[in-house]
Each structure stands twice: as C-alpha cells, then as structure tokens.
Image (cartoon, rainbow over all chains, first blue to last red; front, side, top):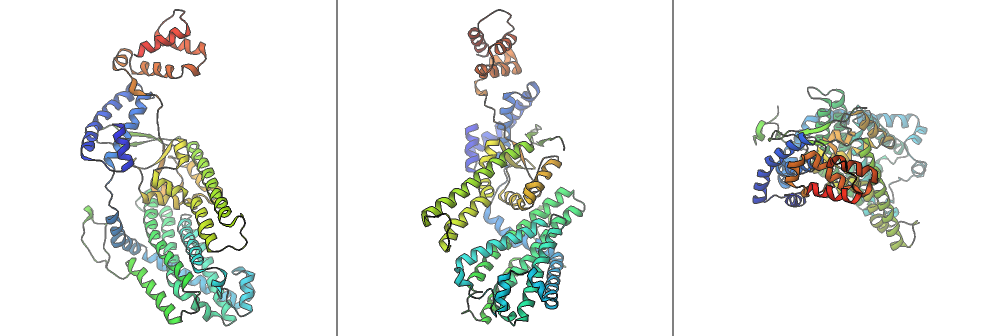
Length: 316
Length: 227
C-alpha cells in the first residue's frame, strides 16, 4: 500500500484499481489505527498507522485540479468580483494618492529646498542643469536590464504596499503617501526648470498602469487591515485569510501587468525616437487592457451563488 | 505562550486524522537550515558565474550579461527558494531535515495559491529581522506566522518512525500485547546504544525472568520472544 501511495504522491494521479484499493483500505486502516491508539498511543505501530492513514486521507480527499478551468475562472469571474468588492477602497486610495501628489507639488513649489527630501543630489543637479535624470537612460544601461530592474522593483513595491496593509493599513498609507509626495514633488521641481513636459512625456506610456496598480495594491492592503480591525461576522483569522486570498489573486494579475509596464518603461519611455502621440496611445491602450481584465467596464459575473451556478447577473 | 494543540481533521470513518503541530523549535530549526542553504546557494551562484564569465568577483562595468547571468539568478535563488521548492517538491530541504511539512488547516497538502500567499506575506513576517513572524508564532495557538494565517496553512511534524513495524509478528503481538511487543522491538533496536546493565534490567523485566543470564542470552531470548 505504501509504495502505491508514494506513486500517487509523486505523480499526483490515482488510477482506477489503486483508487479502489485505497478506498477499501481507508476504513481498514482507520479501524487498526483506532485500536493502536487505544492500546499503545505512543507506540511505533500507532505512529506508522497515523502516517499511512494521513497519506491515504490526502490521496482520497485531494481536490480535483484543472489549471485551465482555474485560470479561466480567475480572470472571468474572480478578479472582476474582487475588483467590484474593492471599488470604493480603490477610489479612496487613488484620491489619497492624488492628494499626496498635490501635497508634494505644493511643498516643493512653495519651498523648493524641500526637494532634497524626495530626490537625490544627482537628480537635483541634473534638473538644475536643464536635463532630466531620465535623459540618456539607455546610455547607462540597455533596455532589457532597465526593464527587468524596473518591473522587479515595481512588483516588490506593490507587494509591500499590499502586505503592509495588514498593519491596520498604516504601512500602506505610508508607502502611498511617500510615493505620491515624491511624484508631486518631482513634477513641481521639474516644472520650476521647464522640464515637467519632458517628465510627463517619459511617464505617459507606463504611468497610467503603474499608478493604477499602486492604487489597487493599496486597496487590497487596506482590505487586509480592515479584516483585522473590523472582521464583521467572520473570525479575525477567517476574515484575514479571505482578504489575503482575494488580495493575492488580484496582486498576481497586477504583477503580470507590471512586467508589461516595466518592458514599456525600459523600451518605449526612454527612447527619444518614440513620439508623444504613440506614447500616449500605448499608455491609454495598456490601461484599457488592464481595466478590461479587471472587469472594470463589464457586468459582474459572480461566483457567490450557491452550488457554483453559472448564472450571470448584473450588479445594480 | 500557548500549549500547542494537535490538528484534528474529521474523516468519514469517524477516526479523526491527528497531526502534531510543529512548535517554534521545529519551525526555527527548518528556517535556519533553509536560510543557510539559500544563502550559500545564492553566494555560490554569484561567485561561480562571475568568476567564469568575468574572471573576477567585483565587476566594475556591469553589462546586460552581468545582470541576467549573475545578478538575476542570484536574487531569484535567494528570494524564490521557498516558493519554488515548496511548489515543486512539497517542502524545502530544511523542512525535510527538521521533519516538518506544510498542510492546510483541513489537513490537505496546500495548493500553489496558498503557498504563494504564505511566501508573499513573508515580507511582513520578515520585518525587524523576522521579529514579526517570531512574535506571531509565539502568541498563536497553532504556532503560525502571519503568512500561514493568511494562507490558511500550518506546519505539522511528519512522523516517520524508524522502527520497521512490518516485522511485527501477529502471534507475538497477540501473545504479548501490542505495547509489550513494541517495547521488545524498541529494546532490540536500541540494544547496542544502551548501557549493558540498563538493557539487561529492561530485558529481564520484559521477559519476566529473574535468572542470571548473560547479555547475549538475554538478547537472544528477546528475539525469540517477538519471533
């Protein structure tokens, strides 16, 4: 039996005859285990039977997996449903992000010396000499390396925004606020040196998607914090687990888009040969694709119906 | 700090599956082994690849090859070690050595999604040199870190008794009773490791024999008892 179990565990498959034998052996092992537990609970035989029983149980109770169906369900139903549930938080985070950007702009515009809080000395000197730190980026490193570094960093930041939400949302607020202040401050500082248009031209192809994902990650992070602070009718652990599971699914999709955004930021954004209209078209088109995948435009296909019905209903 | 409960998983047979939840010790042991393995593996990759491609460890002018052949795999080994090995083989070498494995709260092996969540939440657990995870393990009843709570997983001991229970003789077990038969087998297994006086005393007790038999004779009598 144990060799058959090992084969099942290795391959993840259970054939007809093996399955039947396992089904028959399961209650037999259970009976022997019950006896062994009573007669010699800490003995070697009881421990051995515990192990065989656990392996049989896992093999028989293993849920069926269908990767293609799971992926389809994720994109067609779960993600739109999660986004729908988080829509108010996403809007709140986006508004907070915009507010932080405005604050960053105001701070640097009113007190230019404060730019030192957000930007390195090298970046400040570049701008003061009439150049953006993004100019000639491709002379420093090739697009492939630039893309890989950017999307790795962006994925890490987004996941951190999501995870730190568990600290009652405070970690998320901190990262969203500092990023907003930096972007607002950078635009204000470049505007003082007539370089804001150039910075906007650099950002426009990848920025829509990246900034949207930051807001989505923040909302998912807040849902973690809210699950702990205000779990509703669930236990805290159950609410936290649900928020983490749903948030992680959303972050998985967002990370895929961040890879694309990184490639755009590495290949398109620093390339001076790409005209502004094309950058704008890429930025908007990619953002629309993101919104379509997140189900932001379409009716909600819900999975919450009992029995996993395929019924489609429109949310009010 | 709580006493750690076992995990009981209900079964249709009426006999619950009973899994021993790993304590801070088991978790820490596995973590320390894994940390050393992944650190050494990442460093080894860095040093080997940099030495082979550039013939030096510090590359003054890094190019694309440096990032994709040296830096990216080094980073991936260090940060994706747990996720890749847990998804591919069920557990990391550290967990295998420490005798623990990950299960979901219903006792099943966790899916890819749960493993991904517990590893993403490592960002939170690893704050302040893993203090957050450590405190979580100390204060939760099932000794779980935040990533485990989020993923609905926990670590259990993977009991793998060394005693070959297949050699248990049915008639001997019926004659002696299971507990006595197990004791006899265990004593035989550990015979050489025990002090002669101690093993002889235990053997006499099991054999219910007060005679002055030699060490060898007692050993043979024990073997005969369980045959």
